[in-house]
Image 1 (cartoon, rainbow, N blue to C red):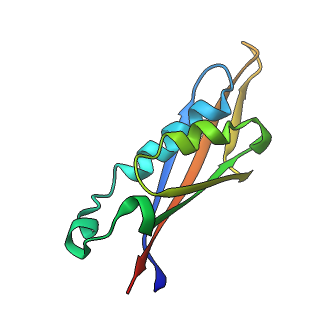
Image 2 (image 1 turned 180 degrees about the horizontal axis):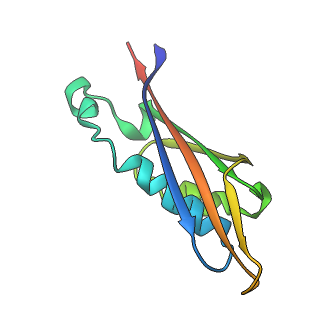
Length: 114
């Protein structure tokens, strides 16, 4: 059986107050996955629990502050892996001592096909 990449979706999420990198990452993932419908699973009779692989890459300015387990738990299907890398954007508000966090997510879905 061969594993073939079938979907690439990208999303953006933010936390406007409080600098929560996980909240921004979760919103970016949800933005990405809500652009797709996985009807291909039914069409090809693919079992998402054993033959669907989801690779998530989150880009934020502070990757070590993303709760990888929370992001992984937010994906409804597949065998999921998540990594956080340097990216995204922080927008400071010096006057209020606050920060807006912008996260980017790339979600790649691969299927094990005969």
